[in-house]
Amino acid sequence: SEIFNSYSQCATCGTRAFDYGTWETFRDYGFVENYPQRYLPAFGSDARFVFDVDHKPNDDGTPNDDGPLVAKFNVPLCQQAVDFFEDMIQEMEGKLSMREQGGCPSEMPSFECELSWQIFDAHLVAFRTALEQSQHEEISDVVWKMGPDWYSPKWEEELITLLAGYYGKWTKEILEDDFYAKYRNFIEKAWAAYERAEEEDEDDDEDEDEYDDGLADYGWFTSPYQYMHESSVHLTDPTFEEAEREEELMK
Image (cartoon, rainbow, N blue to C red; front, side, top):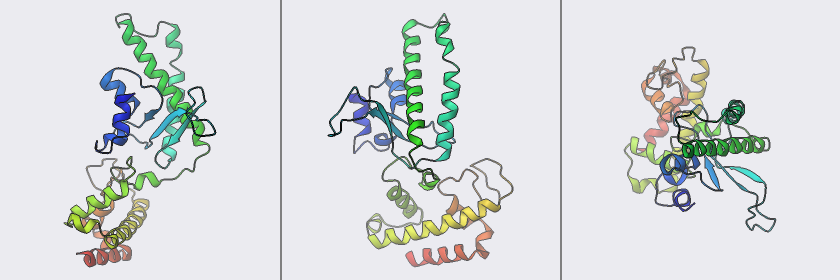
């Protein structure tokens, strides 16, 4: 647990403080982490989620290792995540019969087989727990607007910092409250116009590295800004014109 706790609670470990979970611990160190456990999607997944699974504490807040398992979502829950939990549970439950038939290929060492089923069981329990908790959560698309570091509690600060670098702002300026306020306003305007354009886009090539009508189909974090600068549509879009004027004021 020391390995996991070091990564998940370290203030100077960069993204590993937030995106290093139970699967990553198993992959890198070969054991299934005790509770609490953390689960995240694979890179490029169609779902975004980060949740922790742990025993429910006592009413006075003290730990209870015999308490029921509960899930805590660390980012806003989206429908894609709920669908992912349902699909994974169905798929994994369909493979449980394999255990009764030996569980692993004959050439696989017994300890590897046992470890494989341990991580399998951990994920199945986690997805079931998350799906149950999802019934009590608000579902939205907010997580898809949270930039490349959406899994980080500081996603907004990091996104604004990234955009500030894109527009050539100095680091000291980023710390100013009025600078943050202007960029938040700019981000909201860019997203609003981008979403309107996405709704009107009829050519979805599903390739985040190419553009059709100026749009990055996967809604990558720079899409609204790339769209604003690279698409001719913004020339007739009053929201983009207003956003560009806001940008000029910040220079």
